[in-house]
Length: 353
Ligand code: NAD
Image (cartoon, rainbow, N blue to C red; front, side, top):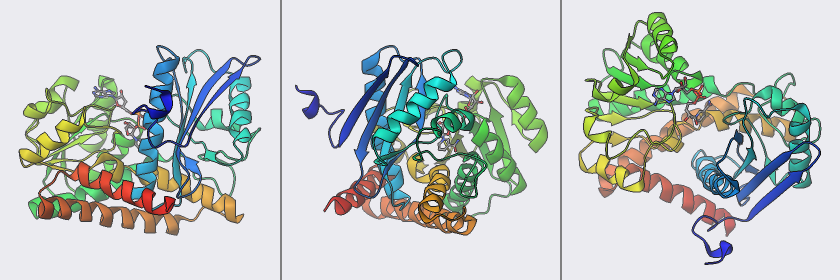
């Protein structure tokens, strides 16, 4: 099968490859869709096993960004950049300046931001060579760290889902948080403040203990987080947390967290639905971060400043969308992830005309 007809490339507009011999930059930028606006999504730096693995990741992630941006009702399309290299050893200012130069050749079709392995400091080097970079600091338009906004969106989504499914407030509700990094730790603080009883875990057990001590949670070892009696399971670590192996161990009535790509495969979404657990689709619930980035892009376009009121409106809209997805799932007797994907695809198709 030709690359253009492959399932991986299906629906994409473009895949760009950049090779800068002076800095050593090898990078792919995938543009899934610009139908709703400039393709926007973070830049990931990862020691990929090979070039094909990097291409596959860029294509998969850019499609996911299109869906996330569409369902969050942002005037943005979806794209993603991946830089091949070990973020712990291969970073140089020249590499990120070259990356900025690569982004600039696309003339605003793609906007970059942080993702795994890439920090705002790295992006500041990239921004020397392009204006199509968001998630920066130090300018009136700057949106800074997206994690607090992501955590706020996830907290509101959990609160709304608990009300809908269990008909109660967060007070006294047991919630298990897997991964207490940038988002998970802030989420723990917000949920504890709302009266929830928390189990937390992290691969870095000292981090889990520190967060637990701060918010009055119970820290458990990473393998034990699936076996608690929590009513809500909140994946906030890496993707694939909910699989055929872990799902039977999770007794929660609700699965709702910040991690991207929580379902190990599409069948897991069906299995969650069939056993009566309510899943808040990850890309609906964790859009707070990209909403924050969108506020920066909007401010730059208008020559204005970052507007927290606009972010608040979009966060409120996100919770309404999640509520609609949960209601449709009950009405139509279909898994929530299927419905959310459908809404995103319809919005992108409508914009394509
Ligand atoms: P992070 O790297 O700061 O935190 C992740 C934490 O999870 C780390 O502390 C890590 O040690 C821990 N972890 C990894 N695997 C684990 C496991 N198996 N068990 C327990 N702990 C584990 O990342 P983050 O920025 O907090 O993002 C968390 C998740 O949310 C990621 O999937 C990310 O893609 C997604 N997300 C983040 C944002 C954002 O604004 N940062 C926005 C949208 C989605």
